[in-house]
Length: 419
Image 1 (tube, helix red, strand yellow):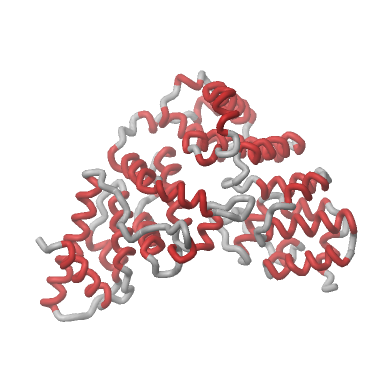
Image 2 (cartoon, one colour):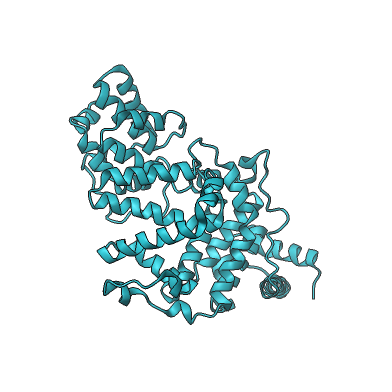
């Protein structure tokens, strides 16, 4: 058995001779991703995926390969012992978060490696509870791969994403531990219970009658279906959670709701209810739901402000929209678009609206061609988006973007004008 320092040296040498040349921390994260998989991934499958081809003398290959396998085994042993702390170098500086998330730094490398390792997991073999936990973990890991993704994952209305990023980083090992437990060790009997039959029949029993895994199955149905029985069940569950939390808890924690992990299901359900209200033509109810969520969590980690912009425009509630937009400094398509429409709807083709239009087109060069119908967007929006790219436009359009522009008379024609 080699010493840890010798293993590290040998693994780094092996990587330097490989085609992919993964960073040492990327390798550590990759092995954690493999350890999360419900089934053992054979060596023959992951060695090439991680390193690519390697060309060097046979006697060196044996020594270096032995070091790689020892490092892999150490990681697997840590998982069995539930020793899931990130490497000491994977820090998120409170003074300079941008430096910690710069390209090549340990934390982004480790998280990128784990995301790559997680790709071996076949989502079709997972139950709903496992799928939800895995997707949430992927969102967190992606948030630490770069400053850009951190701002998306942990963004708040003031543009200061750092507080939530640090709080989530503090709990990252716990989230990984929970995911591994669900993937590899949890009893899956309850998670196999399928609520879809009860929901299809229009029935929903008492909330207390279901175990946690069964409730997660219900959550999956709620987030993907919109039948009347789903809507009824959604209201019942939200009401039950509110009763369970109590008025004192809600009042005392208003303002930090998303920071409490136990309230996130509640916040997710209410955001979903807002979208359902909108799809059913209940615009005023959708607006009030989203406004309530912003009171509970002004940091708005769910990005509820984005659909709220559109809903307020559709309702022509310009003063409320302008008040909401005033403190927001983020240079996103969602913000620029709302500002442009508000200004144009109230003041027409003025100097200020022209300046905002110019900023909007500069913020995303693809926006005009998709919002005006020159190009067709995909039916399903991407899971993540990149500011300034087509993916950002697709997410915007999925939040009633086109309907919003059509609601302001002459706005699409005016948008095409260069002056």
